[in-house]
Picture 1 (tube, rainbow, N blue to C red):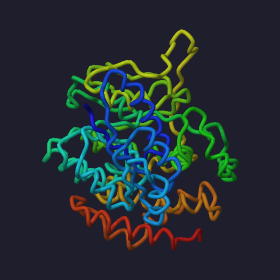
Picture 2: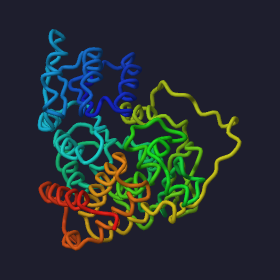
Picture 3: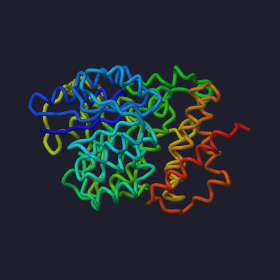
Picture 4: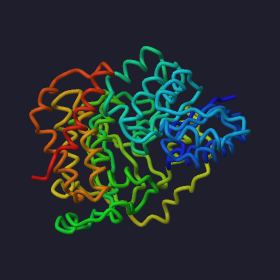
Amino acid sequence: MTTVNIFGVTGSIGSSTLSVLNFCSSFNEIKINALSANNNVELLVKHSIAHKANYAIVANPNKYRELKNALFGSGVIALAGTNCITEMAEVGADWTMNAIVGFAGLEPSIATAKTGKVLALANKESLVCGGDLLNSTLEDFKTTLLPVDSEHSAIFQCLNGESTEDVDKIILTASGGPFRKWSLNRIKKATLKEALAHPNWEMGARISIDSASMFNKALEVIETKYLFNFPIERIKVLVHPESILHSMVAFNDGSVIAQLSVPDMRGAIGYAFNYPLRCSLPVEKLKLEQISSLNFEKVDSEKFPALDLAYSCVSRGALFGTILNASKEIALDKFIAGEIGFLDITFIVKKVLDSKEIIDFENKSADKLEDIICADSLTRDITRAASLT
């Protein structure tokens, strides 16, 4: 029997994870221990009862009574608060999916890393913000980390049996999002609805907007550095509008190994669940004869300046992944609320990164959780107060 925790079950990754587990249950006995959600009690209850979970956890403590009442008589124990998610992560399951969105996913990842079991990681902020701390904890407790982002799962597969010493560069692909063919002037006027319209992937609202701005790819570059212990200057990004080739690894001998599949997150999730085996999955098979071409383009840094910030932040110190992410999250809140325009997200983030309060964090270590939380909290306060003037 494989026991499972899914943190962030009501989002797109969480729902896809349940789809994979339902399919895999035909050849693997699976027991859901805990499911968590941020606010969506209705869907959390539905999933918890349907999958006979031991525990259902809502991060928002104000939703506890609603959750408890909805679960009455089901046998599922209701819990509330982010501390309960972290405590459940510490107890551990054989396989834990961390699909929490944003910085809130860091502490559950650190807690899971102490279990000596398997952490399937979809929360990129865990590595972007706590890469040094998470990696050292994983090593200390001999916990296995398996990446679930499609790009990082692809790199992981390409490097299977290979040494990073033989790698020339790692190449992430990006779809280019909904604004790939737009002019800069048109992007300046982009609406929330337009930013949410990703051409290839079905994703949550926040990650869809991050994809449109390429902040998502900026975080993924930093994530790659920590995940594979690889120099960031040799991590590259190409626009690949078809989203068929998810990433590739170029070796010193001139060979390039790439991973291709139909854009469906269940592929990466299934790979992480069944690893090191490859088992049948409920995904569409790639038919190469039906693909007329695969296209690649350089990233237009004028239209997508967020990507360059990843490289500059890493050069400034280990805490700057946290600072980049925190300022981006608050600027994104402002865009969603209609307070700023789409390109203003990057403008605000750059302004915060250049502020005198932030300069004090340069070249400081990020091996203590309290230091990471402090940098995150201060950056959020600075970003909330930041103006467009």
